[in-house]
Structures are given as structure tokens and as C-alpha cells.
Image 1 (cartoon, rainbow, N blue to C red):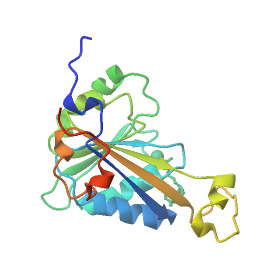
Image 2: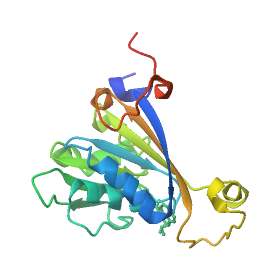
Image 3: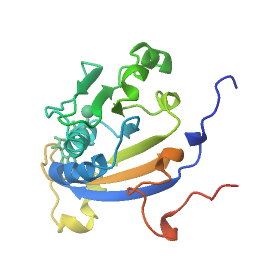
Image 4: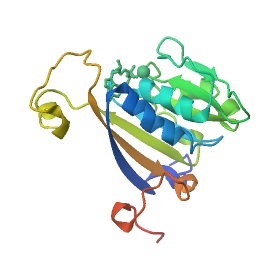
Length: 198
Ligand code: ADP
Ligand code: MG
């Protein structure tokens, strides 16, 4: 192995799961998370197209208090949303078209990292080396038969792609020392899946 392994590489410090209904629900959850973020934080967003990664980022931006207007950056690799106060900026990256972590290094996120919260859609496997710690967020869109079994479905499910009020499962996995002390960490021993220091 040539690259040094960061502490944050392997086992999450904690994990959590949130369920939301509709884009507003996802944004509200993300807004609460955004309020706990600080300059230097690295967030990886995973989930299929339409899962809600960009919708989630809009809520994060609200919680951070950055300039609104967050859209899918699919055709623009990086967008910077400046803070409206003295908080961190939001650097929003879509890595979908990037094939290697070398290409990520070319866009020089390290430059803005220290003064910003960096959110990378499709970042898994590409950007972990940028920081010692990271928060991985996975958005899952239950579809078809699965969706019909959710308690909120009320026995009636429409499977239109543009259903405005779908349910999402949002999984959080925090890696590295940054996340040991945070209000985002779920309380109670039952939630702690990571072993204590050995
Ligand atoms: P991605 O960035 O993962 O491709 P987007 O955020 O661009 O996804 O799109 C998500 C779509 O799903 C939006 O049209 C949004 O309105 C819709 N949607 C419906 N329910 C939800 C929900 N609970 N959370 C997030 N988005 C939702
Ligand atoms: Mg997107």
C-alpha cells in the first residue's frame, strides 16, 4: 500500500437512519444536519439518479446559510455557494463523470476545503483521500412493491416517476475523529455499532 490510511477509512464512528416524505421532508432533515456542519467537513452523497442528492444538498445549504440556488451540477463539475454570513461556503461537486481520484485532484478541491463544507454527489471511492474524516450519506428510494409496504403508503401507491411526495430512507455513516463529538451523533449505546478504541 502506498497511500497512508486515514483513521476514518474503515469502521464508522456512528451510523444513523432517517426517513422522510417528499422533497421538503428531505430538505428539512438536511437543514438540521447543515446547521451542525463546519468548515473542513467532507460530505459524500450516494444514491441513484433521482434519489434526492441535490434536493438534500439544497437543505444542507439552507442549514449552512449559503446563497440559495443549488441545482444539479451535472454539467458543471463544481459550484461554490458563498456563505451569507461568516460561516463556511458550500462547495457542491458532482463527480458522476469523473472516473478516477486523479481527476478529482485536478479540480483542486483542497484549495477550498478548509474554508468550506464540501459536498460530493457520487463521491464514494473518489474523494475519501481528501480529508481525514467524512460523513457518508446514502439516499434510498424505495420503489414498486417495496414502497407499497411502507407504513405511510396507506394501501394506495402510485408508481409515477414524478410522484412529488415519495418516501426516502437516508442513511448516515460517520468516519473519522471529526464526528466523534457532534450533535448529529445518535444518543444511546444501542445506536453505536462501532467498537470502542482497541
Ligand atoms: P439526485 O440529485 O439524487 O439525482 P434530485 O434531488 O435531483 O436527485 O431529484 C430528486 C427528485 O425526487 C426531485 O424531483 C424531488 O422533488 C423528488 N422527491 C420526491 N420525494 C422526495 C423525497 N422524500 N426526498 C427527496 N426528493 C424527493
Ligand atoms: Mg443530483
